[in-house]
Length: 378
Image 1 (cartoon, one colour):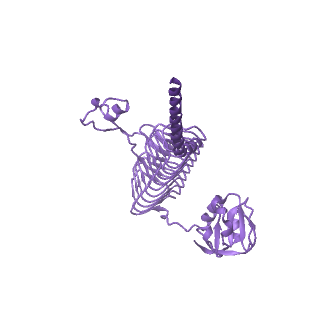
Image 2 (tube, helix red, strand yellow):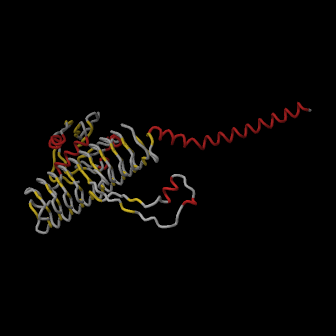
Image 3 (cartoon, helix red, strand yellow):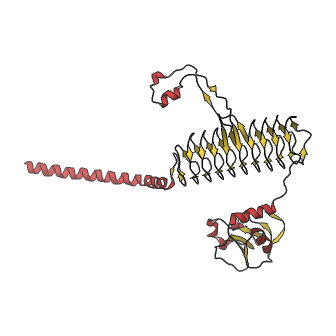
């Protein structure tokens, strides 16, 4: 990646809040995407512990590395940082190109209900629709083609990217970011039937003779709750958060939700949670503060996840999880137990061979004993 202008090690260290080891005046013109393919013109961000094993192969003139790394090489300048990812965050923030947001005020093509209350410092982009009795707070930016329903409340300093859909009665607090296409407040997936379904009968162990071929239509349960998104939440592109059947679906302060995630009705996510792409949380689940759902995690409805839990990628969670657990697999179980189980499974072929060998030896012994018994009988 080409830098806007050449940067010296001194300038980089000031931004990254690092300590320089080497020539502070050396300069670079670009950032290497792969530290192991860096050239003399590059700065390399060497933060991955796996890459650190091969750091001597890096040819970059400037390297940003963890502060506890004992490394030096002639002709290279090293910048030591306490927390490499914070250093990367600061550098990216400094180097970020300007984004193109709508101007302050309401674009002529926007459709705003006469009862809506829009802050004078808000930016309302082209073709935005805002429904009756909705409110938009100070310095909030709403980009093109976003649709906002009635009695929606959006706080201060929010950033709503294009084509977001925010349904009636949704509450969005301050400094919330909705990435493009995010959907908030759609109806929860709630249906019932006039009589027990075949699935219900099968689930409780009913006999096939009790099943019916007649239609048993799904009756929609009105979703009369709402969604509340607290301060400093970010919701990824095309993620969806359903309104509650009764009460509130709540996304706690500081929680970050990745692209294409699904948060079903009546879920309650705690503070500073991470929900990574394509994860799906069933209805009425509770997720404790600071818990992490890696990519593709699926959680059954009515499950309670404790605080500081880590659910590894593709985990299928079928029951409650205690605080501070790390779980993997389908069904999800304690990570150490899962590793032991897989280790034991790999031993099965050898165990089978041992069992076959033991059976053969037992048959041989039985044959010898039978001959001895026969000889004694004679």
